[in-house]
Length: 433
Picture (cartoon, rainbow, N blue to C red):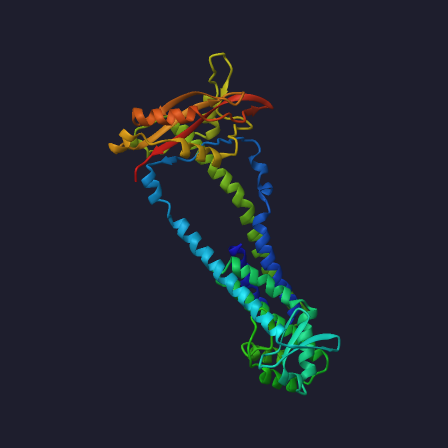
């Protein structure tokens, strides 16, 4: 999502921000935020999957499962990821609390104000100095503003915010800022939306025939008081930009074509997200293939860095798919539907980590290493024919074998719709540090 926001915002910043079609700019900002949020949830990988239909390599070999002493595990609990997640959560809580405080400020002003109905608008007159603002269809002004001769113009300005649902935009971007508080582009979106809202409200006042010089003086006079972050304010921060924009000549309709600059950005985002799933799947298959190949062709630790054969994975496994069990039934390396552990890979990993116990003697002697266990998931889902393909130490090998042999039944693999037996390999790493 963050990447999409970073790609879309420069289009507004450098092509649209200085144009006077404010409604168009508003919807571009809202659309780009919404599009960036929803795009990661859409599966577009089918666009690029057609070229891969002929090869069914779905080896579900787990990455290395590391098993260590309870002390070593405890020491590794506070990882960088945990720390980053903690910081992120604290930031979310901080911004959320800030959001709640703003609501309470708004509620306090609401409670302490006097309600008046003026031209079908609910106006809340506050007995202290505040900058006029609106929240949805509620307009808040100070008692001094209520008694001023420019009161009607202010009502037009603030009612424009309510009629155009600007508060809905602000709530949307506030929620986004809670989730993406660390992303500076989110705060730029927030600022730009507020600017655009003020331009739209100013435009509504001037369309009512208000004298532009008098209205500019009104803005300067009203840009004081207590601002409310969640609301649409007449505030001094934006006053200079708004005065300049009022004098700016209306942009020609052809200027809208600048939005074409966003098309390559949107196309790039679609391609990137569509390819990501395909790329991840390809990487997972490649990794699984190499793990399985290495397990079937064990090497010494000194040879671990030697590149694997450049023969294609399909050719490698087709050559090994001729194995049969004691009854003459084939045991496949690759099938159309690979065996699946109940609950998936995460559940399998959890079972192994929870049940493997580091042998005390091996731990005391500091013996470590990686054990490869090969086993067959039979056509009825049973785990059978377990063996050590590459061992480290009799005690570590025996412990790895014990737990693998205790695995519950799997959902068997299938070839052409028929349940078949399939080889599976799991690398288990015993480590003390």
